[in-house]
Each structure stands twice: as structure tokens, then as C-alpha cells.
Length: 221
Figure 1 (cartoon, rainbow, N blue to C red):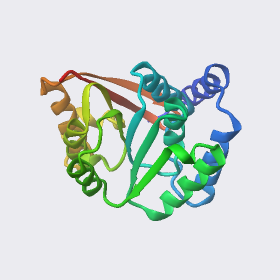
Figure 2: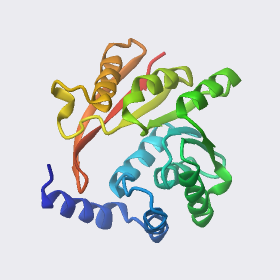
Figure 3: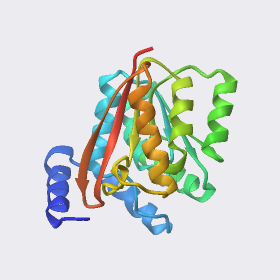
Figure 4: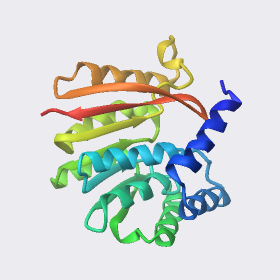
């Protein structure tokens, strides 16, 4: 489900409000040129993530799902030179493309990519007792969203923010479905709504990629 007006508005916002610069345009181009799927977030969404990052004063960000490093670059700019971004990616080829993009963007010194299945990497971070993250962005395989959310709760602190991408899925989220991605996303939303440690909501979005949305949760304790 798409409407050409959605792409027009997205482009207008990117040009007028966000001002997506040549660094981000280059990341998009290199990601597509490497044969990776062009499914990174929009410029407007990237700016929104960076804004949330600044609003909670985030200095430590955890991202689940790297692709070409587009969203991680937004985070890296938002946390500043004293902040860090840890991003988890299962595909070594995507991780290599992302690292090249971060070097070009001048933020490679504050971003670390961990290659391997995200569920395993998350358990390793928990076992290592790493310092809590101020913001966690979940944007990987949707069937595993409940696993990622549970891990995120172990890796954050009161005052942290957890964001899950692609939670509407063209409206499939409210229909009976045996699609593992829909099932996993619905379960994650149910967890957000029932966990007393969280104050959460979800918002629908439309863009050049169609009808979707974010879920956002504030960690209470």
C-alpha cells in the first residue's frame, strides 16, 4: 500500500526540515552499490532517532541491525565525540560496508559493529556486565523482536529509551497471521503494553516505503 504523495512529503521534509547532507546520501549510494537491500530508514526517521537520542541525553546507544550503517551514523552524530554506538549485524559483508561508510562520515572512532547473530551478541553483552545503554534501537529480523526487547530491558536503566521499527507492517499487525515477523512484532507490542517497567506507545508512519510505524518505550525502572 503506497501513495505517491507520501514520497513527495518525505522528500519535502528531508530537503526543508532535515537537510540530509551529502554524507548520508553517500551512505545510501554505497549501500545500494554494494548490493545490500535499500531498506534503511528515511532521512526524516533518522533525524527523529537523533532527536530522541539528544532528548534523553544519550551517550551510549545500542542498535540491533546495522545494514549499511545509515541509522548508526545518525546516532553517532547525536552522541557526539564522547559517546559510543554499538551495533549488531549478522552479515559480515554489510558490516564491512557500514565500517567504510563510518570512516567516510568521520564517525568510525565512536561506532563498533559486532558481527554475529544478534541474540547471541546480546547475551554476551549481558554476561559481560556492560554499562547500561541510554537508547536501544531494534531494527533487525522482526520474528525475534520479543527476544531483542527482553534483552534490551536487561541492558538499559531507568530513563533509557527503547525504539522498535516496522511495527505496523502494512496493517498486518492487527490481522490474524502466521507470518513469523508479524507474530514476533505483535508479541513485542503486547510486551510493551503489559510490562510495568515501561511506558510505551506506537505511532503509524507513511513514507516512500509504505505504511508502517515505530514503537517507543521509556524505561521506568
